[in-house]
Image 1 (cartoon, rainbow, N blue to C red):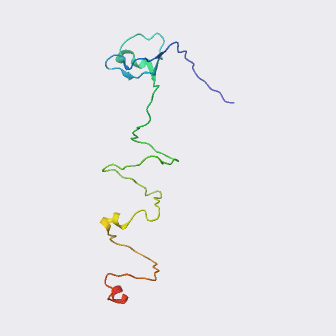
Image 2 (cartoon, helix red, strand yellow; image 1 turned 180 degrees about the horizontal axis):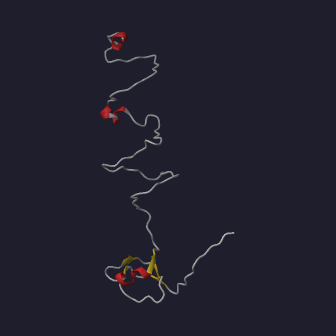
Image 3 (cartoon, rainbow, N blue to C red; image 1 turned 60 degrees about the vertical axis):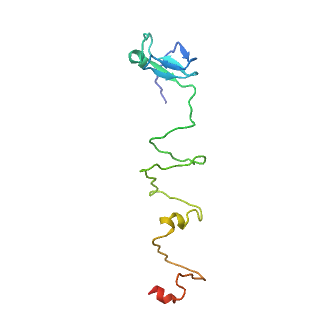
Length: 144
């Protein structure tokens, strides 16, 4: 058996903002046209933000989600297909616990240490052509 206990509160008046500005005086909350305000406390006196601001809630009617800054949290199970991701100076993109996948030839040697790959270990190399900087030496001379 599911038992739900709740307290219903009758909201007698909802105010629709028709002129943008501040509600609750100069230190009040900024409201925009289309926002709705309602009082959570019956018989709340009028006053400024400091006096009665906690008695009121504002429902934003025109939230702009086109430029959101995320300062924390986790994004799971989604693809970011329409935006670029920039890692700011001094910040880290840590993929050490996951997989970082690149397409074939997506990073060239020109992007690694200024065009030089400093060290490489190849456990198996198969080729029918070997190009070397000093073609006059035998392969055995290069291998030591």
